[in-house]
Image (cartoon, rainbow, N blue to C red; front, side, top):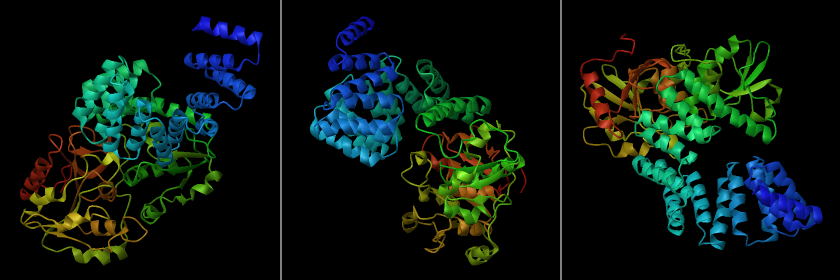
Length: 544
């Protein structure tokens, strides 16, 4: 390749306007990983002959490698403008749009690529990726299988098929596909990392760690694999190794942010001193995480910071019931802060370990007026148990965590137990199909129906004897309020619940009931029912 590059550069020296030589130079430099020089070569081609589509498209590929995705979208668009039947340019623009989360717009481009070139395995693979991004794993699987029929040795499509199967919880099938991808391309880092995730979900933790290690040997800067290995370390209780891996993953995000322009407010990347400074917090990972990590607000304030929150408006009323004063800020008004951070990053930056998690429960409380409004649902002389069985559907993180309402039947059969629904919005249709002998009190359509989330849920919890929940935001609320809580978790849970323990340092009043094997909720609720019959409602620390 070096000899060919030298020959091409000699041709350019003889004729500086030889755009074909400039184009080949760009292609060679791209293959050699010399992206800045490749970009300059394609720019030269376009300056000499701007009507050609291919140099614009190749320029877009270079810009994607440089993580300059906005410019890449424009470059692929310029190629399409010059050749509206350029299928691969549509596909490549789709991949650039994907980097901004513009999945539906990207899918339209991928659909156009398939229409223009239906016998191309590349375009079917690309459309499958976008369908998978949009949560349509079944359709994605069809695309990947078409790509593999057209090109049986297509390692990327095999890897992507494994990802789609994984999204459906078909971990063993996914593992087969990842192994096939690695057989087609030995040492394939992405497939090795995905293999590690499948093994993780199957509870084969040592094998998962080995797969992550192998993936990172081949691609040390792979941020997603670093995050996955971090989660496995954290799940096993090795917080030091977990935070170290997260540091590497965040460094990759930091590099990407630099490539795409600085944020209006600097990130608190390194845990800089906060005395006399201001910091804006947010939490992108859902309401449960916001409730869990709210405990770190006083930690930041103790470091001398003024703390603002750019959180969902629906959570403001509940969170203002905490003991800590926080300035609520619209995202558009963030410019006055010295730093910003996601709340989940705080324990990493401060190197919190399992023995040093601040757990000042209760740090959230209910409103007395709301308590009075819902107290009538509680019946004296019974064990009133609030139940929650389903998280937000459509989120991949919810796979395996939500529970069929009928699985709570063993609790309903315990003498003196009265079940009260804490479920909001989703999953309520299950109340109309209860098994024989099971009753659940439904608070009705007005329960937390307004714009303020969890205000009624918190009020009802305050009067209940016990909360039994799936791994959802309701469980975090109960824990943050210091309510006696039993959490039903899947065999391989989120890292925060760790392994082999019936308690959690995050919530002192929470007791964990674990599936002995994937999908086995019957054993979980049989154990809960046995504890109830035996009067064993002690807290994890042994207190009543």
